[in-house]
Length: 167
Image (cartoon, rainbow, N blue to C red):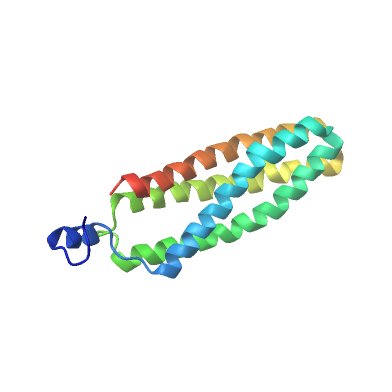
């Protein structure tokens, strides 16, 4: 068993995993949980149940209102993820950061861009379709949001995996 006083092996582990400020790490993980957990809930619980139980005139306004509330949270998580991630990277320096951190940053930037596309594209059009009572267009946009959100969920899992497996 390796313990702090057991010699060079312990120091090697510390050098491979630079210390991170606890608050930044906490905020970063909390934001990731909020975003990815919310996407999981929408994709695997709310959307299937609403599709099974509600007709489009009830389902699509529910989805639009739920997404509006959730997407407000996602904007906050993006800011927190970006600021806390950059603070941790700057704390160790880009050259000293593990490969997994670099992968997480790259994947995270793609996720942020994809969310921006979802928000300003299909989500905006979903809200317009609901106002116009165009249920066919609304269903099309809701499906598009679900597909793109699935991609973002997979990217989020890959980003988390990068931190654990790319040391």
